[in-house]
Length: 203
Image (cartoon, rainbow, N blue to C red; front, side):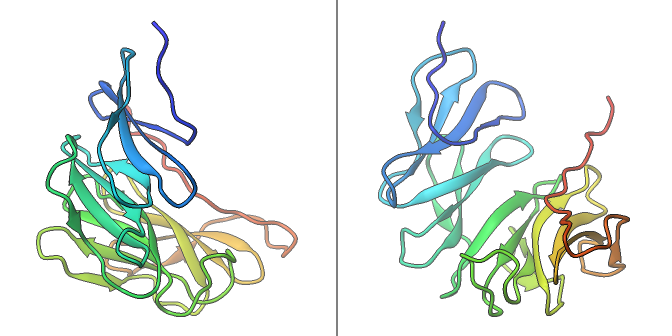
């Protein structure tokens, strides 16, 4: 059986039953889920420019980025496309949402502190954490450099991210922004380290 696929990177659901992706005309994409066993895509969102979807750890919810209300914000929707909820509300773009391992928080990148989202490494992008129960959101990287590409550790104890000054370096910090430290990497500005991914916990 041939799998129906879309034109953008996809993500497998935690239980392995669905593939999550987005597709559509420029400026009018939607979120889709596709049965992993093969079959037609189900459209989950309509009426916006929706992209970069991510599963919650239990597979019940999907976080994604959308400019449906004029600003590039973070949204949450149930896995069947119901219960759409806007999570952020700021004139500057928010992007790159990732669930914490317990599903209670999102880490993301915000450009509200002066960075240009079209120029990676230019300006003061910050890593933010949002509490899904209260809706409270705050910056945790708090540095004048460009901070982005956040990734939770599998145990939720650390967030890895990229800090760019004259070049990119990998850092880790606690979810409250404390204990920031640079990981070993190339020291010369002609090299860039970025985009950390944690090794899964062995089962």
